[in-house]
Length: 135
Image (cartoon, rainbow, N blue to C red; front, side, top):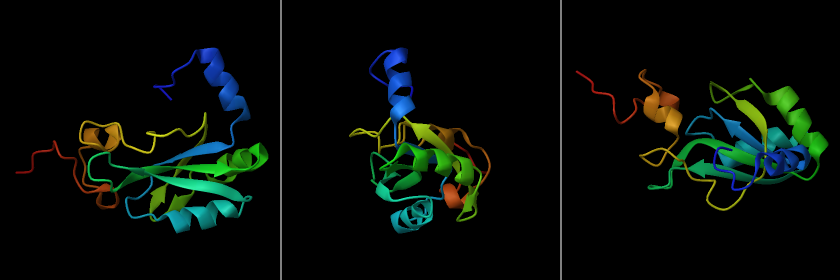
């Protein structure tokens, strides 16, 4: 996480023991229950936090999945990275841990920065970005 408040060593230590995953490239229409059910196949899920546009509080294509045990987080990365959910290939990585405020997108428009840079139409992630001029 580029906004981690501590040192690189502290970040690495948190990452080493974390049971939290960052799941990216989700459809804006993927639901918490779908994600919970899928990731629960690996092991008991403690929590799912859906990423939201910080302004309108709508899903913006990412989430955090918290497990009780690190081995389940590692297996989820191994088995679900690249898996398709709602027509999208998920990116799944161990995260240093969820904290309040991280559920919100960091882009200028409140969503994810990557969605503000896209130039192609992507129905599952809100269509065109807000900066694309369509003739």
